[in-house]
Structure formats: C-alpha cells, structure tokens
Length: 160
Image (cartoon, rainbow, N blue to C red; front, side, top):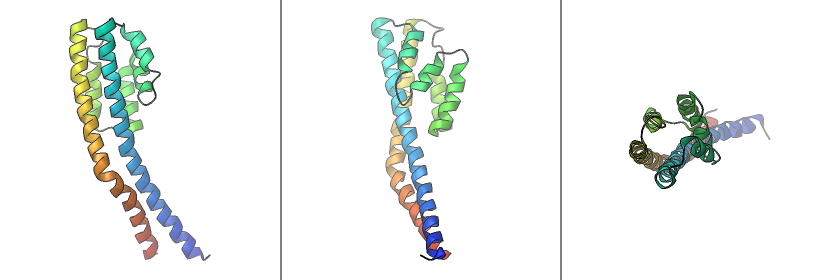
C-alpha cells in the first residue's frame, strides 16, 4: 500500500470519527435530559406519596445510571452548582439546559412540601421540554453529522 493511500484513509477515518463524536454529543445530551426528567418525576412522586425526606431520596436516585451522579452530588453541601457544571461538561448541555437544572434545585429542602411539589412539577415540565428539543435536534442532525464527518474526511483525502 502506498503512503498516500494510507494517509488518505487516515484522514477519512479522522473526519468520520469527528462526525461520530459530534453525533454522540447530541445523543448524550438527549439521554441525560430524559434521565433527569424521569428522576425529577420520581422525586415528585416519592415526596407526594410517602413524604420521603430529601437526603435518602437523593441517595436512592444517585444509584441510577445516566443521571445518578447528579442526584448524588445534589445531596452534598455546595454540590448543586458543581453538579450542574459537571453535567454541562459531561453531557454537552446548553445554557438553557443548565438554567433549567439550576431552577430544579431552588427551594428544595428549604420550603414546605406543597411548594416543593409545585417546584418539582414545574422543573419536570421544563426539563422534559428541553429533552424533547434535544431529541428533535438529535433526529435532525445525527445522521448529517455522522455522514458529513466521513464526507469531509473523504474530500480532504482526495484533495491531498
């Protein structure tokens, strides 16, 4: 095999990998927001039905896969904003996503049960809307990003 062919294949593969990574970022954001909406719904149900104290509830939610680290960090002092920042980096969240997660924590543990339930219902709705938007972006652009990356890599390889 000639060095030019090997180089061309490597450039094409690098473009494809970039496209796959970009599509993966869209998928990660969508999955995380769906998990957060489900976790928020579970929090609301547990508090409404059983008046579960916040600390054990957050600990129990901390064992869940996609958003577990977030709920676990929520239970620690000063962990809320750090958890939002970590989630933002880990799951490629937009500024609006981060604001929605920050609103989720407002008043938790500092207000009455009915107020907590109202806040959780509002946060669940907002996070669900953000998840639906992320899912729509994923459906629209994931294929374009995957194949676009390979196409750009192939074009660059041909130009070399």
